[in-house]
Structures are given as C-alpha cells and as structure tokens.
Image (tube, rainbow, N blue to C red):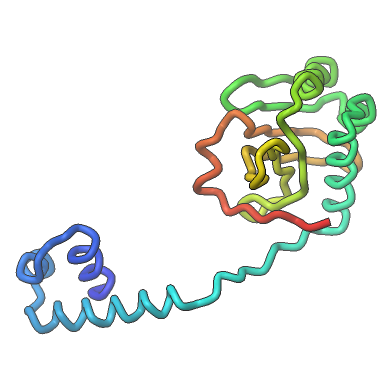
Length: 178
C-alpha cells in the first residue's frame, strides 16, 4: 500500500518527496524506499506479455450466436425474425425499448436500411456478445455490441449498444475467430 501511495503521490500527482512524507506520515527514507519498490513493480508489470487467453463460448451459445450473426450479415431478416420469441424484449441503449415480436420486428428494418455495419462474434466483459463493426473503416474497430439472451432456441432479449459509445472504452472486448 505504501508503494502504491508513493508512486501515485509523486509520479501521478506531482508531489515532492517532502510533501509525500507530510501526507503519508512516513520518514523520507521510508518514502524513498516505497517509491523505489513501487516503480520496480510497475516495470515488472509493464514487461509482462499482454497475451490474455480469448474466452471460449459454450458450444450452444456459440452455435446460436453464429447462426444469428450469419443471418443478420446476410440481411435475411425474415429468418432472424423467425428466431425471436413472441415475448421478446429489446433495448436499443440510449434510444428505445420495444416489447413483443410485432414491435421488435421494426428494429431489423432499421438495420436493413443502413450499410455501415457488419457483425461478428465476440465476448464483452466475459459475456457472449455480437460485435458491431463498420466495414468501411480499415481497422475494423468495434463501434458497438449486442447482448442476446436465449430461451431454448429463441431470442428473448436483445440489448443493442450501437448508440452507447461510452460503454466501449471501459469494456473488455475479445473477438472470436471463425
């Protein structure tokens, strides 16, 4: 704790060693030692490889989501509509909420009129998700995502974060291959 505090007070907030001693109540020697150890630990953390394992989806989740993504990307919205339950709930975050198959069916028409999207399979904060990308952008950056809940083989809830870009910077996103 002393190491973390010393690094934050000196390197982040810009306090002098003497000011840091006043804030923490530690001696100058203890503050210098804590700062040295804290910086050494940060160097070790920075040197660690960033290769985090891509989470694996449950086989059933992956099969259902791949089918949904493939139909959506093919713009076969009649087939997508066939996957949704009568009591489906939809939230387009920051825009609207719809309930029931008749209301939610209009949502797919909105995507049909746009061409600035392509869907792919992924994981957002440990949850299976559908990633929304702009195919016209060369880097293929994720611009939004959808969380889809299933009951057996029917979609019962969709949360679409296309219009909530503030959710992306803090989200842990992994792209699934294939």
